[in-house]
Image (tube, rainbow, N blue to C red; front, side):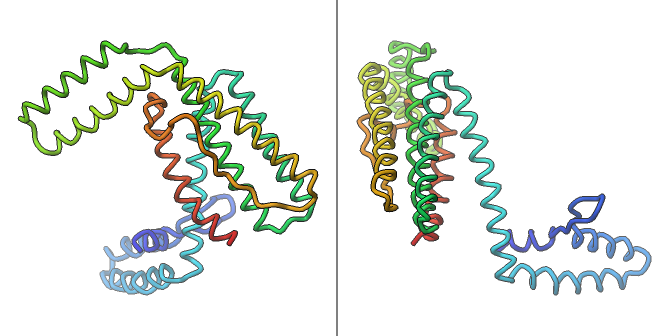
Amino acid sequence: MWRYLKSAFLVSVDVPSLGRVPVNALGAAAFVILGFAQPAFWLLGLAIEAAVVPALAFNPRFQKTVEARSLEISHADAEKKRQLLVQLLEAGAQQRLWGLAKKCNQVLDVYRSQQAEDYVVDSNDQALKNLEWVYLKLLVARHHLLSPASETEQSLEKKIAELDQDLRDGEETESLRQSKIATLNILKKRLATMRKKQQTLEEIESDLTRIDNQVDLILENATVQGKPQTISADIELASDLLGGSVFGDDESAIHELEQTYRRQKPKAQKETA
């Protein structure tokens, strides 16, 4: 509710030559200034704000507007982070990603040409976006696995041994202990990934090829069948991307995007139900 009250207080309108102006906030500031000359203005301003702000904040239409604006900002921020991940890929990997995206758009164009219902197009658009996201994660993982390693197995083993010893000593606070345990788990995952690097690269390439073929099949079915079908984005990967250790320094960005897409996904499903 706090965000609705805050948005109601800062509500803005478009003013020619000035752009968006927070009229309510400016009005409140005016009452504060006038109150120094006549204190009664403070009471008047407080009464007006107490009536206007809650009335607007509790208005269902206003709340929907606030939620829609928040979703737009969240989506824009997520897209910016996604583009940063794309930019770190080498040219060949970017071309491969763009090729997949082009085929996904062709699928949607076919469905639109068949005058498919909006909920079918929206649902399939979400499914294809999910496949593109998995594809990008695979390319990012491969990028880090192929990049020169900043650490060796020996250096990771040394760090793990040192953390193990610190935890056995047990001289730190509980919060510090939990932090060290989390770090230790990450180091162990990184070491395991390093030890099976070639196997992981082969699994990633297999998964990339599988998604390429799946999208090709979806496009062929959409073109040949002539009847819009609901697309499934479920795919069982041979590679393990859940641990996060294959994403290197981009692990936090991947995690943040996962959380953002997870929040947006139920909304899309609800709209297409």
